[in-house]
Length: 488
Image (cartoon, rainbow, N blue to C red):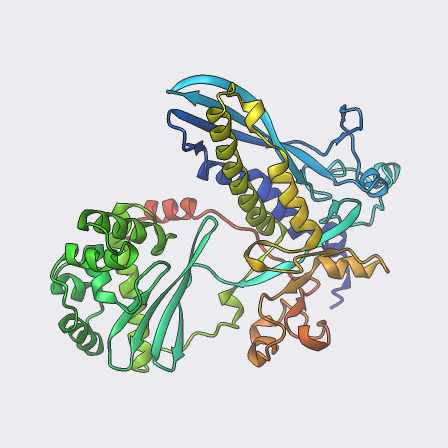
């Protein structure tokens, strides 16, 4: 059977860079409004002043000439030849309130966002080959890159461990179950460890050292031995470990458990403040992907018992160890996800700068309005700097790189490169090896020589990466079909 016509049709109808463009479009349409909703109210130190933000909109690229006049129809070729950034203005509806009375409402420009070529916001989107030639573009160019100060920059796909997925591993002191809990910009590792003596300990950001799991379970609302036993499976190995941990947990009730955590997070404070601070730490930093409210504490307790169950089962040889190099435990962050991280960081700095400008304006007794407190450069400068240098959020380097135009194939390989965040100076033999799950997804041959060998990879020619999907519609469908939730 001759399959070449099928392969020809695949590459004729689909672009090499289609997944990068889809990822960037999803960032513009869905992720940007979510980032604004996370910080839609800004309350500075000065009392009785509040700023509300809504309705973010990114316009198509335009250029502001030397005389200050803006001009649309700013095409990529002009950005290349004039050493300009191909970017579109970001507009927000901002409401300034003082003592709950509206002082000023304005559609403010808060900065500029580089626009990916051939995305929905690009002037090249939807153009036929003849129109592209008129605009100075190569009809065969796949797009999916940015133009920063006249230079073509491609974002290298980042390979990261999957978030919100429990992985079991063996250590010298015992077995640990670990999950990277992600909520917005916050990523926190939560680890439940079973020591060789059967004791269970838990670690999460801002938690005390050597915090016993059962102390945290009591703080989360599992108060009696019966409630804790019901949270674990009815197996002899489980019952044995549960009783060992219960007998070595010396806190009597929920208040004592919270106070034990509070003495670490708020040392030397009065008991009321310690208890409140302990609750705030549990809600904010413990498994934030489940929720960050008081009502979510019991769900977090059951999730922790599930992690502990897996660690105990591994200790008794009832389950295997998870392979971190298995591609089911990996995720690829495309251009849209990388831009989401960068914009969220830049927007937080913008909010910080906005608070400072409000405080300064009020203390100097000047008139407070939106045009005087908004500095558009606060967002634009940080985005442009990261994309120019390749230094990204979370100490990642080499995320953006110059598009290689030596021949036609060079830019195509740049758009399909995958970079691992692991240190290139360490041996890491297993991470560099070709894993069985790479088959059909990654090219086993195309990787550089030297220290980057095995850490920089290439997607296979017909491999595709899907974009994120929302969980709520699936949960609603399952509930509609009568699926019942079981205790973890």
